[in-house]
Amino acid sequence: MNATTPQIRHITLDALRGFAVMGILWMNITAFGFPEMAYVSPVIGTPGSPSDIASWMISFIFFDGKMRAIFSLLFGASMMLVIERAAATGQSPAHVHFSRMFWLGIFGLCHFFLLWWGDILFLYAVSGAVVYVFRDWSSERLIKTGVLAYIIAAILLILGLGSMFYLQMQAAQPNASPEILDDFAEMIDGLGISVQSLAQETALYRGSFWHLLMDKLTQQVSTPFDNLILSPLETIPLMMIGMGLYKSGFLLGQADPLLYRRLGIWATAIGTLFFTAMALLAVYKKFDIILIMNITQAWSALPRLVMATGYVSLLIMLIQRFGHQPLLHRVAAAGRMAFSNYLGTSLVMAFIFYGWGLGLFSTVGRAQMVVLVFSTWITMLLWSKPWLMRYRYGPLEWLWRSLARRELQPMAISR
Image (cartoon, rainbow, N blue to C red; front, side, top):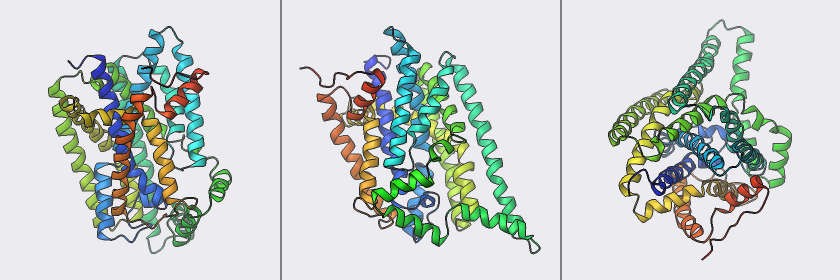
């Protein structure tokens, strides 16, 4: 069976999505189990032990942002696939697409308010609605425009966050004015890293479901919409690139094998080199909060795209080489059920760490969290394939499809 057949096309996209949904948990679990800023620095919310720092370095170098970038690329590709299928079956692509995005946005808001502050579904729904206007562009135009937009946004972010260094430098001057000192103190306080802020956040997440919900509805009600100010500047270009890579056949495994090999090796190596250098700089500077914010939120943007491209290339090579193996089919099944696995993981992790569940928030070490990650990966691989042997869709994929089409979709596979 060659790489252009529908079966290989589907297993390639599904397996890539499976790897992404599994990999994204590696980073998300920190945001479930510790105060928000612990995601950025290993000396916030945790003792900063050698194991904490080592765990952070592994996460930052190999996972942070890369899985989200791959997920965004694949979202653009999947969106393009749905639009093409709608047109091929005589449906209105616009109606199908915007109905899907509307309900995805609803799922995202429910996810944010009821389960977890780190939701990306609402962002994806809004970004997906925007990139629909580019659906008829050629693959080359989509990729070039997406890359250019991504680079411009990254540069603007670097310049914007770089202003933190200037304020820090001004505040450190012996003759710093009270206004400068107040501005610097306000900036640091806004990061929520004081002992009092961390204690309040810990108490909140160890509290009841009702207290968490009320905090979301009173203190964080605008957060999903606030995230639309800057986040789409990364997400929309990545989706555009994903659309272009789908149209070109790259994400379907149809490109020159030599291209996959070269991109896989060189892009991954270059990205790893940059991220390792930034991680070592952070350690050397003892995780200075201004530096670590710039490293994780701005400087990592450009090498992140390079490294994500390398990862995708390596994974496609892996899928093409071992696509017939049962384990790859299980990964692909997890990818077909990425929506259910993503939200299901949020439910499980919230239950483990939040007060309405086991209440383990800020009690499990970073290194020990790896056990939870591996256990969840195994669960995804064990349940997804047997489910899809009996049913056409994952449970939440079925619900999303039924809502978008305004009628219950056939679920069981007829025998």
